[in-house]
Length: 151
Image (cartoon, rainbow, N blue to C red; front, side, top):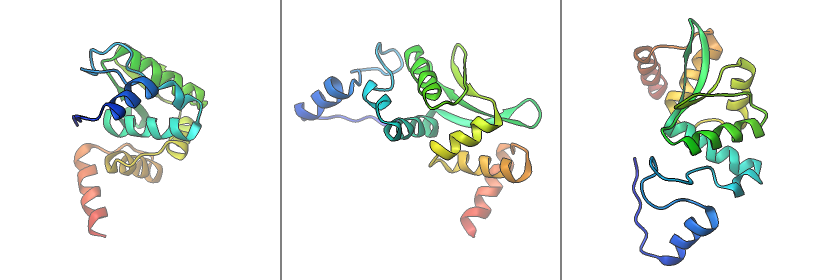
């Protein structure tokens, strides 16, 4: 987790008033959502989703061998916002009490194509799934990352 302190009123006002970020605790915060301005620009929306996916999401095993993308958040408004963002990108998704999911393989491929990930854990799991058809276990992933870094 990162914590930023700004001692510049102009930056504070921009983030709170223009972008729409709430002040204070983000888990308990009212109004925590993807800023509306991002929905007007597909590229910005994809960048925002990538950041959320890399920090609060992942690609995991669903059933025996099927993949799923999962976003995890205790904040209901943020979950709803992620769900709406995915739908606006024509990615079929589901929402539960704490998570947002993408189950369809074609939508997972589309997600990685248009949103992507900068998190090596997510990119390697996706790559291994595409090559083998299996979502690897964490221990296997660690070994794959070691081999990837060596090469």
